[in-house]
Length: 213
Image 1 (tube, helix red, strand yellow):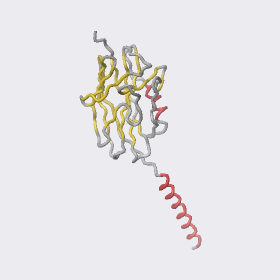
Image 2 (cartoon, one colour):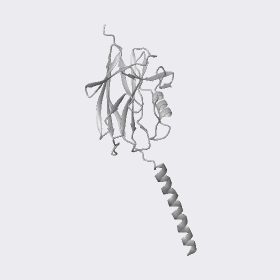
Image 3 (cartoon, rainbow, N blue to C red):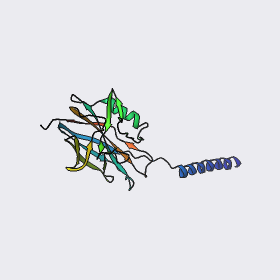
Image 4 (cartoon, rainbow, N blue to C red):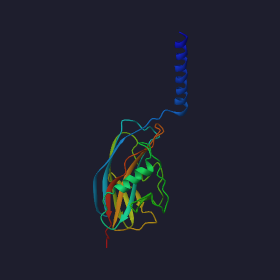
């Protein structure tokens, strides 16, 4: 009888300790939405694609869904480069479903892979930051958005669903080449969850820069 009572006291003590840490530290809760990129269409002075977001969990008022657009300059038609997507995952998604902020410094590439420097577009002449990144996407319900980049006079007009929302420029340390290869990833953050979710970085086409003269 005494042995059973002693065992019960130990179980109660362990449960109390667990409850204390659960309340004081918080039990990790992860959000893992489904993000996909499709309908990529590249052309002269333009590039477009569709980004879709699906998740059964609500982000709440604090939720932020940011679209990050990165680019690199090439002289020939750029293919999808696994070295770039792998390096992004290595640097910014150190553990499964839990990533880090992408901190952008003007004049410095966000990452370098296979001797290719990959930069972030600037927004209205300013360096992009977490959690908005290049553009904020809806933070409620599932969605699908058509994204289009139009190159004009050294600037890139960013449209969502046919409506221009931002003017992007290249990082001052880069010069326009024949092609601008574009990569995209989606960042998801909310006070309701303990993780910073990043989708995989995806190649979403290229802009072939053609003189209007």
